[in-house]
Structures are given as C-alpha cells and as structure tokens.
Length: 299
Length: 299
Image (cartoon, rainbow over all chains, first blue to last red; front, side, top):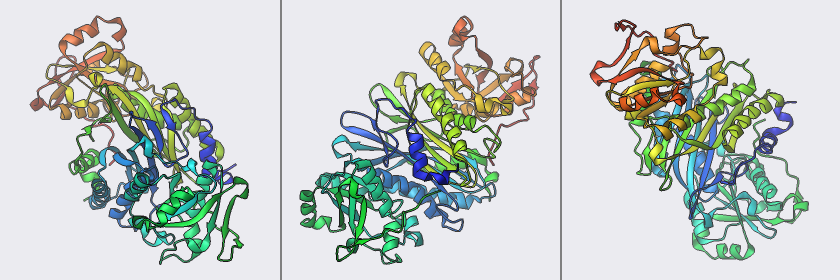
C-alpha cells in the first residue's frame, strides 16, 4: 500500500490516532495550530510549515519571496486561530553550490516579514540538501476568549470568506498578505464560531471545518469572490494557497456584518447545514452543481 | 561567493547579526535552544533540527530508527540547556512512491521515543519530496535557576564529558540516548557553568563553548574517553553525532564530582584557559599535539 491510497489527510489522521497527549495540550494535531496551556489569560499556539523546492516554489522563483512565503504561511496559521505571532525557528536546507547571495536573499525575505509582523527569529538549523527546503515553526499567543478553531461551526451559521479566490499560483502564493489584522478585527468585534485559512482550496478547507464540526455546508456559487486572475469558478473553489480566511458566524452575527462598513471585505458565500447533507454547491437558480475539484493533495 | 567560503557557522552568524529580537527573547540564535520568557519560575526552550536523507541518514537506514533520531536530536538540545521536553511539531517530506509501511515505521520511531520522554506530538505538516526530510521543532521548560548556556565557562573551569566518544557513524547516531536524565542530575546536584551537546564533534563543540564564553580551552588527550568502536583519538575528537554532554564546572565543584559515586560516568578531560591561548590539545608528557580535525561542517 502506498501513501496515495489513503492520501495526505488519511496519513495525518492515521498518525494522529496513535498519539496520546497530556492535559497541557488543549488542541493537538488537526487544527491550524496546536493550542497549549500558557497562563490564565492566554493559550500558546504552535505550528510548522515546510516549503520544498519544486513543490511549493519553482527553482526559478525569487529567493526573497520564497523566504517571505516560508514565514507567511505560518503567520497565516496563527491568523486562522486568531492569534498574535511571537517567535519562530527556521530549519534551512540548501544545495552545497548555493551562492551566498541566494542565501542572503532567502534570509532577507524571512527577516523582513518577521520584523513587519513583530516575530522574533530565535534560532534555526542549517544543512546541505539537494534542493532547497525551508521549515518554519512558529509560536503565538491568543487570549482564551478569542481562540477560534475549525470545530465550532453550527447548523445555520453563515459562511464568510476574506478577499478573492483563485489564480494564486500565478503570483499571490509568493506575495500574499497573512490575514492577521483581519482575524484580530473579527474576534475583537464579532463572535466567530469557526475559522481556517484557505491553503488547500476553498472546498477542501471548508471540508476540514465541516468534518471537525460534524456538519454539512452549502456554497452559493454566484457569491464566491473570484480573483481577476483566476481561470474561473473551479479555480476559485479548488486551487490552493489563497491564504484567505474562511469562517462561520451565527445568522444574528451575520446581520451585524452586513451593516458594518469595516466588514465590507468579508463576503457571505454559504451556510452550514446538517451533516447528512454533505457539501453542496448551488447555482443562481438554486440547482445543485456537481463539485469537480477537491483541492490540493500532496499524494 | 559560495556558502563553503564562509561555512555553516559563518552563515549562521551572518544571519544572526541581522536579527533584532524583543525583550521576551532571553537567548536567541547561538545556543542549543532559544530561551524565551514563560513565567516566574520557568523559561521556555525552543529548538529545531532537520534530518535529510543522504546527509543525516542513508536511504537504507531503518525508518524506525530514523524517526527515533529525528526526535532524539531535539531532546539532546533540550538536555544541553538542562530542560524538560514538553511538546513537538513534525514536518515530514516523503517521496510519492513511499509505502505506507515505511511511513508507519518512521512515525512509530518518533512516537515511541516521544512517549518515552513524555513529549506531546501536537501537530505537523506532510508534504511530498524527492528524498525523505524530517524537521522536528520542540518546546521545553527549564527552571530559571537551572538554565545552563554555552556562554558560562570561566577560566580555571574543569571540562567534563559524559559517555564515550567516536565511531557514532557506525551505529550510535541512530540509537543514542539523549542525556536528559544526566543533565537534570547535573543541575540539581552541581553548579554547572556551561554546557553543550556534542553534535558537531568534541573539538568543534568545545569551540562553540569557548567562543560563546570568550575563553580558551585545553584538552588532555589521554583523558578523552574513546568509544570501543572509534577508530582512534582523532575520531573521538572530531567526528560528530555522539550526543554526549560537554560541560564545565569550577575546580571546587570538580572536586565534588571526583568524590561522588553517582558522577562516575562523567570524565574530566581538560580545563578552561585564557582566550588568547586558544584551543590546545596536549599529550601524556604535556606536549602540545597538532589538532587536525575540525568536526562536521555542512558546507
């Protein structure tokens, strides 16, 4: 049996089932960040993301932007839990023949965005490897009252998304803005039931919320905000690395969104429904559209 | 200019110079772990280590032991700071064609040693890659009074090492015992001035202590405990991945070591001297021996 027979998420679940954690772990594997005890007011968030040359970026990509992305994807995970980023360690593997200039650009990309978001780079590990590989682990803090997980969606919730989706592969995946400010605005002004960042694609990541929450979901296709550079609806629904926020709120909170000017960049795109109804996509006339894409899977 | 022109440690220093951290960082890049504020009693330790197929293990290596090593190297970093390991996240890149059995063995190796040392595996990231790559980031805690760094060595200190050195490449690098218990014994019973784990080789790692402490060091060659499987003194001095503890204590504390039966596994091998004298190796008759090896460097 090979990994592709159970897929990336099947493998993660297979591992997760074998893990037994102590009570100091509030949430282990299965959300955007692990949630750990810290003090009375805060939980600590802990996340890691690995970027590999040829998978997450091309060898021809601008190394400054590659370094930037390596930090930004972890910032996006912290944002998905509504946290504030604090510290990062970086493991870097680079080919022996790499120039100092290449490494300097990689590091400047990391260091600049770390500074921008107040993240301390506190350590790392440097190794030689055939292809460039960067793994960033990040710590953050979130007030207990503000923590948002994937698992909190409730039947009747309205599904929202920040920004526009699709076509990220062209450019945005190297230049996106991690939605830290937006996530903090959300939790400080609204009661958010569930949240995730869109890294695998809208449908795949909504699927993660639905699975964690034990619900179904309905997407109203005409409401999905499609990026100008996307090739169409399918691209917006299924392609990964938009790094926008996908979240759900009660209908009452949704009404507050519609009347709040500061919330105009969040688009209502659907509704949480019963689990047995699964994930549905409907068109302008209320007819169900067959879902073709499943989002990015590594295997 | 290529990386080999400045070397692995040159590159780390080059990056470290450009980092500015906030006051919540007690020690950033440059020790075995980053040291972060946590609460009144404890500091938090944060470390990462990346293992790459073909560099840190052969593709023919037992995947269970590879997984074990991936966790053990971070445990050894926590030990070097006299801490207690707490939580880990794992980034794993494996070839698409990998069997499920291979992944299961890798994970079991990680999970078993994590359980053994009370470490919670709280999250991770799985990706496909050409060669297997595993990056583990680990958090630990250390009582403020027990924290030991590389930088605390003082002139006149006696240099000690745990266990035997050399020949690790044959077997030990995949099966070593991280010296957590020994490190805790040391700080709970003695005043330890400086400590590091031997990952790059005795001379290289002593070099890290000397540089961080602004001192020189003298090694008395006949006292270096050479492993039965080592090829000789040079091997014990220069080959990496022994993962033993190297530490320094005052002469008064050293006398307490010599009279304490529980400390019989720690061997005095030298003395901290003035910085201007550098790193010296002397033989039975007190003559200086030329130092040939420099330890493992990635570039």
